[in-house]
Image 1 (cartoon, rainbow, N blue to C red):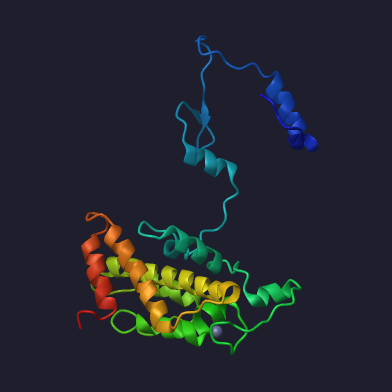
Image 2: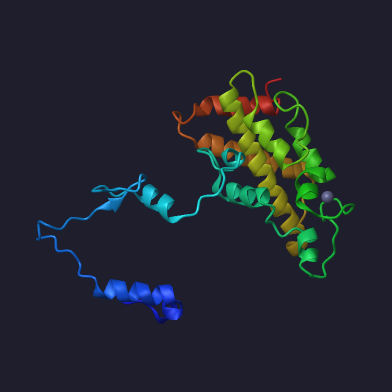
Length: 236
Ligand SMILES: [Zn+2]
């Protein structure tokens, strides 16, 4: 095994190289040798598990409630990614850019009336509020006030078809967050903007596309689509 010189900058890397280069590799033909893998309990067994190995190697963090709203079977990967970073408040919104010392205009480009922050861009902005309102009525009473409220809305819904309704809610949340961030970037970097109704149609089309792409047996896809139509009152 060759270890790059960049790894040898620390004492641990030097020690690792010494150990690896002086350890005799067990021979498969020698019946007295066998490979053993560490288990959850700290013991060793003959079976290798990537998940067990990963969990032994990593430093686990406390479980967050919102993970179910970001990562779920019907998710749209690019929307989950943006929503994940938004949950962590890691999007480079203008309030953060200014806090880092950058000289940028602080106004939200979607409404031009408030300082852009996570809280404002995704919930308090009148542009965002107009989009959230399009999905209110049958299952969502009023637009969520912040990310925490959006998570609670998705996880705590009780009623008919609650499991399926929660999936549709989670899709609505992550697609709206994703498209709001994209709209914000489009206006800043490409000077392209969309009226709220056009924006709503893009969100609507994205949700329909993912629901139509689900296989019939996957969480009762046809019911999900029908529930979504209920959301936007197509059947009312
Ligand atoms: Zn705004």
